Length: 294
Image (tube, rainbow, N blue to C red):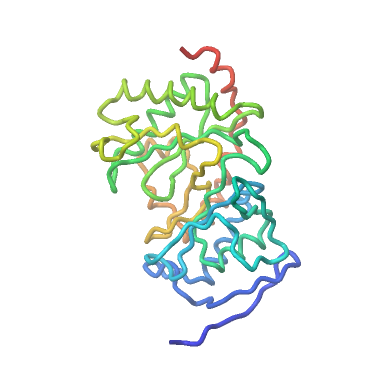
């Protein structure tokens, strides 16, 4: 067994220990830990925008992809002094603040970032997300499904941003104004979900049990709730091609892009051209829909 390699870098005044920088993390595409940390630093302004000040769950792959993995909710010990934590439901979560914590987690082979849908100390949602979850491992209709949902939201006067999950699904993100509750968003989600499943019973289902969904795409409006998580915008995913959860233009959805088109090796170029598509949509008046619901 080769000897372990260990060094350190200083970021924003904080020393971060780096171990085994040449360890393959995504061997199929040649991404080592060293390359991953470089890509994570480039993603950080975008990833932190949707992960900062939230309760963070990460998925760690100590030996890379594919390999043994585990979800980490409780902050690992020992913790560097610069890492902030918060306790919620008897779990001590990491609370991301900046690049040092992100790179520290990257060194621990945290390859996926799943933040809470609310800020620390708040019970209100930060945004609204609808999760379109395929029943099939390869689902050629996922962009068609996203387009249907986007059109329904638009008909209700709600602008939205689709994003790949980085795995097989798509999430629809709606920026919201402060004060909307999770329960209010669930009511809207149920209304939209029922409408699209009645309109396209060949495409959507509201069935929670995967074994009962057939080949239909699950319209999941229930996952967006306090105490739950979804893959953050711009998080890498532990898939063989090192895909990244990427916001899309609706025109790209219409052209049936593949989630595999967006990955750690090309995301920087895309962001340099397009920037953060979510931030370009102002908060939407979803609260005005709630009194009108049946």
